[in-house]
Amino acid sequence: MVITDEQHRFGVRQRTLLSDKGGSPNVLVMSATPIPRTLSLILYGDLDISIVDELPPGRTPVKTSIVPEAKRQAMYGFLRDEVKKGRQIYVVCPLIEESEAMDAAPAEVIYENLRARDLRGLRIALVHGRLKAADKDTILSDFHAGKIDVLVSTTVIEVGVNVPNASVMVIENAERFGLAQLHQLRGRVGRGAAVSYCFLMAEPNERLRLMTRTNDGFEIAQKDMELRGPGEILGQRQSGAMALGAGALLSDTELLKETHDEARGLLTRPDSEEARAVIELAQRALGERLKDAAMN
Image (tube, rainbow, N blue to C red):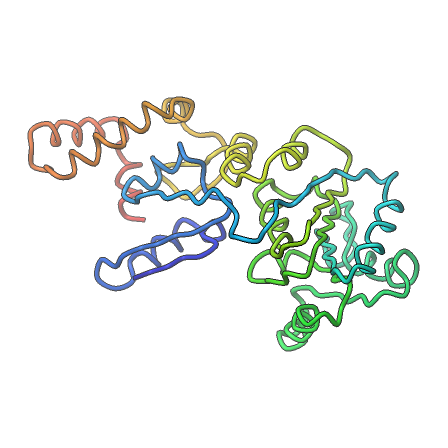
């Protein structure tokens, strides 16, 4: 059996290699921000799709708000109040250090500002991907143990970090993250019974407002796909426009479901005249792209 957690983090070729381990193994893939239902029917027509659309017992939905720069100091006051209640806080930044290529808040600068001024007196630590593994593990262990009030980090805490006592997630320059990634980051809080909050530091826009309206990973992934494009079905490109025809199908879920079921039926009788006719039609329509996809 091959189980792939956080499936969205794997590329097309990686997913294929994992599925090819062993002799026809059972495959289970999991993700909090899955490829939308409609596209899943095309890309994973050989998989059964199960949807877990409720929180585990004892958890409460995360309250998400967009916080413009003008309200930053008011937010810091709220963070201090949460720490007084015994809660802990994540502050996530898109960069480790300042960059001329990107105008965004670097983790090192945010860390120094919080430590010296905005949240002075609290126990604050910094973690990012350039740290030695042992140092990073020590900081994450201290945060889990409650020895750190505020953890400033890059996206290294996006998956695999479980601290039920953390109740606030602050995401700097939220406009620079994809919706699916924002949803993954938000999932680091709300893991206990306490009410939890996610603050998106950015000017309001329609894309970010979606995050304040829903905690549904499918709905968020659907919007993310609409904005980025689904990429290629027969190929390795995972974003951008889809070929005309296949892209039009995405708006008709019922037709996709019917097509999916009919294709599965044909696979049970591959030597039938009907199946051979469909294969010939696909070969004429898709030609070399079909061969390339089979090789990959």
